[in-house]
Image (cartoon, rainbow, N blue to C red):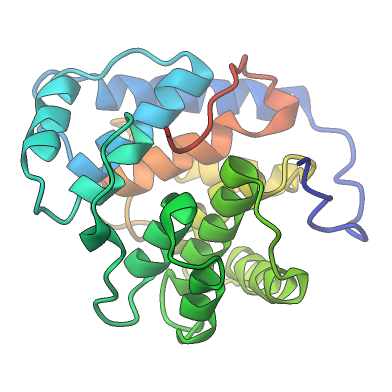
Amino acid sequence: MVPKPMLQSAPDPGPVPAEVTLQARDAIIRGLAYFGSPELPLDPDAVLIHAYLKDRFGLPELCSAEHVLAEIRRDTAGTLHKFLRLAEAVPFKPDFLKLQGKSFDNITVAGMWYDKLPKPTVLEDRIEASPLDEQYMATHSLWAMAMARQCFQAEVDTVLEHQLVEKVMSLMERTDLRWDDEAIEALAISQYHDPYYVPSYKYIQELVDLQNPNGSWSWNPGQEVMGSQHTTVLALWALLQYKPLAWPTQPRSLVLH
Protein backbone atom coordinates (compact mmCIF):
# COMPACT_ATOMS: atom_id res chain seq x y z
CA MET A 1 0.00 0.00 0.00
CA VAL A 2 1.47 3.35 -1.03
CA PRO A 3 0.74 6.04 1.55
CA LYS A 4 -0.96 9.25 0.47
CA PRO A 5 1.03 12.47 0.71
CA MET A 6 1.16 13.58 4.33
CA LEU A 7 0.72 17.28 3.59
CA GLN A 8 -1.48 17.51 0.52
CA SER A 9 -1.75 21.30 0.82
CA ALA A 10 1.91 21.90 1.65
CA PRO A 11 3.60 24.58 -0.45
CA ASP A 12 6.17 23.54 -3.02
CA PRO A 13 9.56 23.77 -1.26
CA GLY A 14 10.94 25.36 -4.43
CA PRO A 15 14.32 24.87 -6.07
CA VAL A 16 17.07 23.65 -3.78
CA PRO A 17 20.38 25.53 -3.99
CA ALA A 18 23.14 23.21 -5.18
CA GLU A 19 25.31 24.12 -2.23
CA VAL A 20 22.68 22.77 0.18
CA THR A 21 22.78 19.29 -1.33
CA LEU A 22 26.58 19.37 -1.40
CA GLN A 23 26.71 20.45 2.24
CA ALA A 24 24.17 17.78 3.20
CA ARG A 25 26.23 15.08 1.49
CA ASP A 26 29.39 16.33 3.22
CA ALA A 27 27.55 16.31 6.57
CA ILE A 28 26.54 12.69 6.04
CA ILE A 29 30.11 11.68 5.26
CA ARG A 30 31.38 13.49 8.34
CA GLY A 31 28.67 11.89 10.48
CA LEU A 32 29.63 8.44 9.21
CA ALA A 33 33.28 9.18 9.99
CA TYR A 34 32.26 10.05 13.56
CA PHE A 35 30.41 6.75 13.91
CA GLY A 36 33.18 4.83 12.18
CA SER A 37 35.83 5.69 14.75
CA PRO A 38 37.10 2.42 16.30
CA GLU A 39 37.60 4.28 19.60
CA LEU A 40 33.89 5.15 19.90
CA PRO A 41 31.95 2.87 22.31
CA LEU A 42 28.73 2.32 20.41
CA ASP A 43 25.31 3.18 21.82
CA PRO A 44 23.09 0.07 21.29
CA ASP A 45 20.05 2.21 20.48
CA ALA A 46 21.96 4.01 17.72
CA VAL A 47 23.31 0.70 16.39
CA LEU A 48 19.78 -0.66 15.92
CA ILE A 49 18.69 2.32 13.83
CA HIS A 50 21.97 2.32 11.95
CA ALA A 51 21.39 -1.32 10.98
CA TYR A 52 18.33 -0.19 9.02
CA LEU A 53 20.15 2.77 7.48
CA LYS A 54 23.12 0.58 6.56
CA ASP A 55 20.98 -1.82 4.53
CA ARG A 56 18.75 0.80 2.93
CA PHE A 57 21.38 3.40 2.05
CA GLY A 58 24.46 1.22 1.54
CA LEU A 59 26.38 2.55 4.56
CA PRO A 60 29.55 0.90 5.90
CA GLU A 61 29.36 -1.50 8.84
CA LEU A 62 30.16 0.19 12.14
CA CYS A 63 33.16 -0.95 14.15
CA SER A 64 31.98 -3.23 16.97
CA ALA A 65 28.38 -3.19 15.68
CA GLU A 66 28.20 -6.97 15.55
CA HIS A 67 29.49 -7.18 19.12
CA VAL A 68 26.75 -4.79 20.30
CA LEU A 69 24.06 -6.68 18.37
CA ALA A 70 25.29 -9.97 19.81
CA GLU A 71 24.87 -8.58 23.33
CA ILE A 72 21.29 -7.51 22.55
CA ARG A 73 20.64 -10.90 20.96
CA ARG A 74 21.81 -12.77 24.07
CA ASP A 75 19.93 -10.57 26.55
CA THR A 76 16.46 -11.90 25.78
CA ALA A 77 14.97 -10.20 28.84
CA GLY A 78 16.63 -6.86 28.13
CA THR A 79 14.87 -3.65 27.19
CA LEU A 80 16.37 -3.55 23.70
CA HIS A 81 15.85 -7.18 22.69
CA LYS A 82 12.29 -6.54 21.49
CA PHE A 83 13.68 -3.81 19.19
CA LEU A 84 16.22 -6.16 17.61
CA ARG A 85 13.73 -6.54 14.74
CA LEU A 86 15.19 -3.33 13.32
CA ALA A 87 18.39 -5.25 12.61
CA GLU A 88 17.42 -8.88 12.07
CA ALA A 89 14.57 -11.36 12.20
CA VAL A 90 14.01 -12.38 15.82
CA PRO A 91 11.58 -14.86 17.44
CA PHE A 92 8.53 -13.20 18.95
CA LYS A 93 7.80 -13.40 22.68
CA PRO A 94 4.43 -12.34 24.13
CA ASP A 95 6.32 -10.38 26.79
CA PHE A 96 7.34 -7.91 24.08
CA LEU A 97 3.81 -6.49 24.01
CA LYS A 98 3.18 -6.18 27.74
CA LEU A 99 2.10 -2.67 28.64
CA GLN A 100 4.41 -1.12 31.22
CA GLY A 101 3.05 2.36 31.67
CA LYS A 102 2.17 4.89 28.99
CA SER A 103 5.62 5.18 27.48
CA PHE A 104 6.56 5.91 23.89
CA ASP A 105 8.45 2.60 23.82
CA ASN A 106 5.17 0.72 24.28
CA ILE A 107 3.73 2.58 21.30
CA THR A 108 6.79 1.97 19.13
CA VAL A 109 6.92 -1.73 19.93
CA ALA A 110 3.21 -2.10 19.04
CA GLY A 111 3.98 -0.75 15.57
CA MET A 112 7.10 -2.88 15.29
CA TRP A 113 5.21 -6.05 16.21
CA TYR A 114 1.89 -5.05 14.65
CA ASP A 115 1.53 -8.50 13.05
CA LYS A 116 1.61 -10.09 16.52
CA LEU A 117 -0.87 -7.81 18.31
CA PRO A 118 -3.81 -9.66 19.91
CA LYS A 119 -6.04 -7.23 17.99
CA PRO A 120 -5.15 -4.43 15.54
CA THR A 121 -6.69 -1.70 17.68
CA VAL A 122 -4.03 -2.15 20.38
CA LEU A 123 -1.72 0.28 18.61
CA GLU A 124 -4.23 3.10 18.32
CA ASP A 125 -5.53 2.39 21.82
CA ARG A 126 -2.04 2.92 23.20
CA ILE A 127 -1.60 6.13 21.25
CA GLU A 128 -4.96 7.55 22.32
CA ALA A 129 -4.26 6.66 25.97
CA SER A 130 -0.98 8.56 25.93
CA PRO A 131 -0.29 12.25 26.58
CA LEU A 132 0.89 13.35 23.14
CA ASP A 133 2.33 16.58 24.52
CA GLU A 134 4.98 14.64 26.41
CA GLN A 135 8.41 14.51 24.80
CA TYR A 136 8.83 11.97 21.96
CA MET A 137 5.24 10.74 22.27
CA ALA A 138 4.04 12.25 18.98
CA THR A 139 7.13 11.28 16.99
CA HIS A 140 7.07 7.67 18.19
CA SER A 141 3.32 7.44 17.64
CA LEU A 142 3.66 8.60 14.04
CA TRP A 143 6.61 6.24 13.56
CA ALA A 144 4.55 3.33 14.91
CA MET A 145 1.62 4.10 12.61
CA ALA A 146 3.96 4.35 9.64
CA MET A 147 5.51 0.98 10.50
CA ALA A 148 2.10 -0.64 10.81
CA ARG A 149 1.05 0.69 7.42
CA GLN A 150 4.27 0.32 5.46
CA CYS A 151 5.54 -2.93 6.95
CA PHE A 152 2.23 -4.73 7.59
CA GLN A 153 -0.27 -3.03 5.22
CA ALA A 154 -2.41 -1.89 8.15
CA GLU A 155 -5.39 0.43 7.79
CA VAL A 156 -4.73 3.33 10.13
CA ASP A 157 -7.01 5.97 11.63
CA THR A 158 -6.44 8.92 9.30
CA VAL A 159 -7.92 11.44 11.75
CA LEU A 160 -5.50 10.34 14.47
CA GLU A 161 -2.70 10.29 11.92
CA HIS A 162 -3.43 13.89 10.90
CA GLN A 163 -3.35 14.99 14.54
CA LEU A 164 0.05 13.35 14.93
CA VAL A 165 1.34 14.98 11.77
CA GLU A 166 0.36 18.42 13.11
CA LYS A 167 2.12 17.68 16.40
CA VAL A 168 5.28 16.52 14.67
CA MET A 169 5.31 19.47 12.29
CA SER A 170 4.99 21.86 15.21
CA LEU A 171 8.21 20.42 16.64
CA MET A 172 10.06 21.48 13.49
CA GLU A 173 8.46 24.91 13.33
CA ARG A 174 9.24 26.08 16.84
CA THR A 175 12.09 28.51 17.50
CA ASP A 176 13.12 27.42 21.01
CA LEU A 177 15.64 24.57 20.71
CA ARG A 178 14.50 24.15 17.12
CA TRP A 179 16.80 21.24 16.27
CA ASP A 180 17.18 19.38 19.52
CA ASP A 181 16.99 15.59 19.55
CA GLU A 182 13.19 15.47 19.44
CA ALA A 183 12.90 17.88 16.51
CA ILE A 184 15.58 16.04 14.53
CA GLU A 185 13.65 12.83 15.18
CA ALA A 186 10.56 14.61 13.83
CA LEU A 187 12.42 15.52 10.64
CA ALA A 188 13.51 11.90 10.17
CA ILE A 189 10.14 10.35 11.03
CA SER A 190 8.12 12.75 8.86
CA GLN A 191 10.09 11.73 5.77
CA TYR A 192 9.91 8.02 6.64
CA HIS A 193 6.20 8.33 7.29
CA ASP A 194 5.44 9.97 3.95
CA PRO A 195 7.75 9.28 0.99
CA TYR A 196 6.18 12.22 -0.90
CA TYR A 197 7.03 14.80 1.75
CA VAL A 198 10.03 17.04 1.02
CA PRO A 199 10.96 19.34 3.91
CA SER A 200 12.08 22.89 3.27
CA TYR A 201 15.73 23.03 2.26
CA LYS A 202 16.12 25.65 5.00
CA TYR A 203 15.49 22.88 7.55
CA ILE A 204 18.30 20.87 5.98
CA GLN A 205 20.61 23.88 5.91
CA GLU A 206 19.95 24.60 9.58
CA LEU A 207 20.56 20.98 10.52
CA VAL A 208 23.87 20.89 8.64
CA ASP A 209 24.96 24.15 10.28
CA LEU A 210 24.49 22.59 13.74
CA GLN A 211 26.86 19.67 13.10
CA ASN A 212 29.77 19.56 15.55
CA PRO A 213 33.39 19.68 14.32
CA ASN A 214 33.75 15.95 15.09
CA GLY A 215 30.83 15.08 12.77
CA SER A 216 28.21 14.52 15.48
CA TRP A 217 25.08 16.40 16.49
CA SER A 218 24.27 17.35 20.10
CA TRP A 219 21.15 16.39 22.06
CA ASN A 220 20.51 20.11 22.50
CA PRO A 221 22.01 22.64 20.05
CA GLY A 222 25.20 24.23 21.32
CA GLN A 223 25.68 21.70 24.11
CA GLU A 224 27.65 18.45 24.42
CA VAL A 225 30.27 19.26 21.81
CA MET A 226 31.28 15.58 21.77
CA GLY A 227 27.80 14.84 20.48
CA SER A 228 25.03 12.31 21.05
CA GLN A 229 25.00 9.07 19.06
CA HIS A 230 21.21 8.94 19.27
CA THR A 231 20.82 12.45 17.85
CA THR A 232 23.53 11.85 15.25
CA VAL A 233 21.95 8.70 13.84
CA LEU A 234 18.60 10.52 13.63
CA ALA A 235 20.25 13.44 11.83
CA LEU A 236 21.83 11.01 9.36
CA TRP A 237 18.43 9.38 8.83
CA ALA A 238 16.85 12.77 8.15
CA LEU A 239 19.57 13.77 5.68
CA LEU A 240 19.77 10.44 3.84
CA GLN A 241 16.04 10.58 3.12
CA TYR A 242 16.15 14.13 1.77
CA LYS A 243 15.00 13.55 -1.80
CA PRO A 244 16.91 16.36 -3.57
CA LEU A 245 20.09 14.73 -2.26
CA ALA A 246 19.26 11.58 -4.30
CA TRP A 247 21.33 9.29 -2.08
CA PRO A 248 21.08 5.78 -3.61
CA THR A 249 18.63 3.52 -1.80
CA GLN A 250 17.72 -0.13 -1.73
CA PRO A 251 14.33 -1.51 -0.62
CA ARG A 252 14.33 -2.38 3.06
CA SER A 253 11.41 -2.73 5.43
CA LEU A 254 12.15 -1.00 8.72
CA VAL A 255 11.41 -4.23 10.57
CA LEU A 256 12.39 -7.74 9.51
CA HIS A 257 9.80 -10.48 9.69
